Length: 258
Length: 284
Image 1 (cartoon, each protein chain N blue to C red):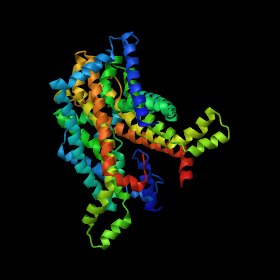
Image 2 (tube, chains in turn brown, purple):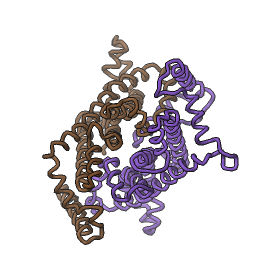
Image 3 (cartoon, chains in turn red, blue):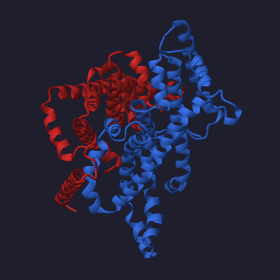
Image 4 (spheres, rainbow over the protein chains, first blue to last red):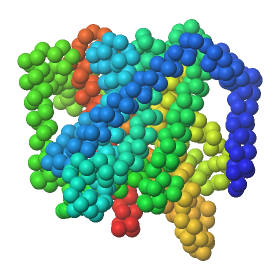
């Protein structure tokens, strides 16, 4: 199937879905008192970017996600490098990591709300916690995958351990770290929106939704959901594209084509 | 057992999706490396006792609170208290029901889509959008739709879990080795046999990669839905503890959910290893 055929079919699928939902809404199959028709939701979604409040809410969510991810990278990657290069540390810390990692980050929301009275800080802190684990674990995996020959070569040319780490270990672990970041990003949005739903104080997409909900404006709530989906989609595409561009050499080496 | 073998195994598991570590053969020598766990707990205990950190009660108090709250019941009820039955059972029932529903739907739809090029082209843009919607942003919508209660929580869990399962199943069913299918044709297998004997087994490793991701997502969605809109369950109990400033009870919830996460992950990995043992042996 050519690209054009795929694209046409995909567009048809989207249009067909919208048509079916719209008809279901108009004929009362989906009761209009509960869910507004999809055309109305999309119309509201189209006007939301003009809404000053909504824009600042989206920015609040994105800010928490991005700063959380950045802080997590600054903590987890160096920690991973340290653990990866000191076997004693790694073997001792790994069981602790395996115990802490399965704790669902959202179960810490009540605790974070105590520790950080400002909801924006609570959000960022939970995002840091959430992102740290996949970044740390993937850094460790990546370091385990480093070609020993490359390390030995550099060593025999007289490079010190830090130089070897900077020139060989980190670059070859980088694709794995990027994968960790991509996994982290999708959960990041879940965590941020959940905190906003529970503590809407400092704004955010979830805060916007809970406000719309208490005003019984389901159309605005769903329109925000549509935007959350678009943001998630954009983030995913961005990270996948960046991974492809930056690490095409890695895919070629390992022969992964997908 | 050489460490090289362990390492290869671990990187092997990350490649196909998740990131869980397969811990095999817990020998006494491995147990020695758990020394940091008791040390960390002890350090926390001592620091909390001397520092009076209000939000970090010593672990001993958390354990006592857990025992009082949930596990000091009569032996006839497996030591569960009334509170435990009221908190844990609804949560667990919803978790498993939602997870099972989402997995069944995800695998069915995924395999069907993976075997049909046209069908998958038709729904792919929709799928990618739907799975990008953070499920938390749908929880208020489900809350408005179903009001507080089990249907809303089930819907949240199912929506959160179904996409990784569906996408991975689709991927697995799509990339079945052509030789297998052709061999099946030579043996004149019917449609059903081709599905159960060739496509499902060939897609199984990918399907399991999706299921593995779904276990922790189901737990996350269970907690979110209970925190946002529920009148019972572990999440609700934690929120109640938070509002009553009962910090040890809140921590009891965190510990319980962490244990649940560990148990579910370990159990799932055990099942996966059993089911996919043929795959492992065929590859090596």
